[in-house]
Amino acid sequence: MKRWLVILLVVLQPCLAQTPREKKLSNDVRYLISQEGQRMKAGVAIVHLATSEKVSVDGSRPYPLASVFKVHVLLELARQLQAGRAGFSLEQVVILKETDRCIGSGTLQNQPGGTKVKIQRCVELMESISDNTATDLLFNRIGTDSVNKMLAELGYESSNVFMTNRAAYLIALGMGQEWRGMSGREIAARWRKLDHSQRLAAVGRILKENQGLTLSRFQAAENASAARAAYADDVAVATVVDNLASPDDLADLLGRLYKNELLDKRWTEYALGILAQCKYKTRIPRLLPQGTTVYHKTGTIAGVVNDAGIIRLEDGTGLVVVVLVKDVARGCSDRASTLIAQIAELAYNAYSE
Image 1 (cartoon, helix red, strand yellow):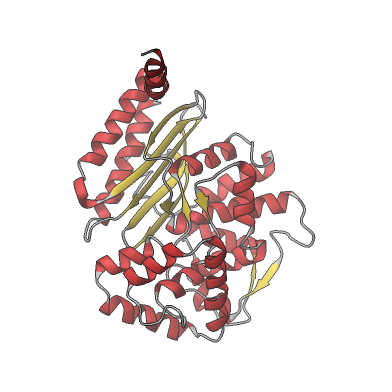
Image 2 (cartoon, rainbow, N blue to C red):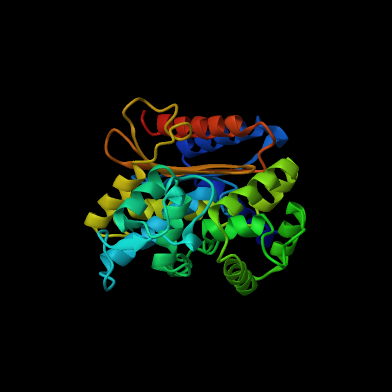
């Protein structure tokens, strides 16, 4: 009997340890999510940095990041710049090559081959308008293995960030010999069976195979896929062939950033300043008081609607809000954006009273 009592106390301790504010916020967030029924699944992590109070709803499960992985690229880039990596600076110029181009969001893809662009400009494009080509230029520059090394060093076990936008698109579109002719569901099923080293090898092969792919052919393949593929197929592959992180991991990473535990003061201010440039305001910032500062990054692919960031409260303290939504039903993307906005509003009100 005593043994079972000990086990029960261990199981219940997280609930017993919650403050009334945490408990109410957790219940309110869960209620909002439950109202969506089968239309979507959401993982949430909210952390009030001044008190360390936390709400986590399915927070330990890895979710597809979509463009939110650009936060990870930014932070590892800043770490390398802070460390004074030889010959690496914001003023350094990189040259756009055909193999850097990626379809999807952004404008840099439309610049001619040989275009010279500064690292600083790539960073601004990556975070402000979620430019995929600018992101891939940076990710390749810092090393696509560098982010996972950072995450491992920081102790995050539910995150895996190693794919460029171009690689993810090529695989999802079946543009390699080993993927050609497969449906989205079939590609997703095969991808799930691969371990990390096998996925790295598959990425290397498909990038090599498509070295000569022009932007027009790349876009044509995307257009053809969109015309023939069922929505469920698009969702299946987009949510599996992607970089992943749990809401808890991401919230902790953002918290470390705000508290100057990840970077020194100069580079912390730089990273936050870049995140404040995000032009998409329909999620975390949407229902907050006008003028509220939010450092965040959105992400959207088929069936995925995300936002992750830090709300600066009136007293200067930080409130981390991460909402990652997957398996969004057809036609429900706006509902998912509204859900994120409502959760952010609940969190803001809970810690502004």
